[in-house]
Figure 1 (cartoon, helix red, strand yellow):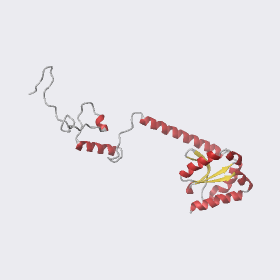
Figure 2: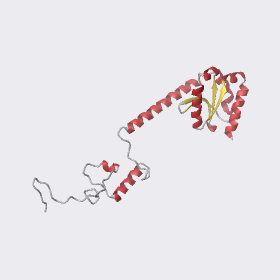
Figure 3: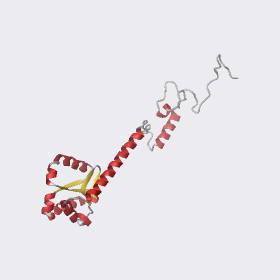
Figure 4: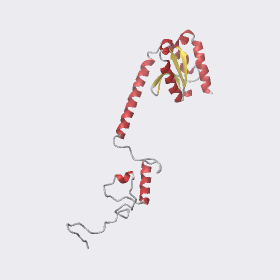
Length: 204
């Protein structure tokens, strides 16, 4: 028999839910991210159901239950997408610039490239390659060796900038060899010997 109080309010006991109760356990107000998404007044789960919920959430995120975390806040995905798009655009710009530089290389770069190309030193070199946010003159990917041809006057004005650039490349796992452009033009064989010794060291 259904009982109704004045005003039509039902006095029947609340219907049981899938968790066995319509109210959270006494003194156990849930702070679970998923529970906060439930409508106001919705029942919270007991420990056993919450454990299953966390395990399901962890599985969906490919995380362990201990490291499962709520999703990014609203706008987070858009922010990450914008960063990714910006990174892709910058990479494409660098690649295009590197292609242009291959056809507009300096005389000293042309000379040294004639001695490096075709695995003449035992490893394959590529010219004007993009590494991170830099374009390097020559790269031997097999041994992570970067060879830079430094114009004497130009390099003199960029000592600090080139040192910071080299430090970042070294932290990324590359070895950097700087060869003066004047040496390449004056004594190509000696410049090649510098590269050959570095190749031998990196190949050990």
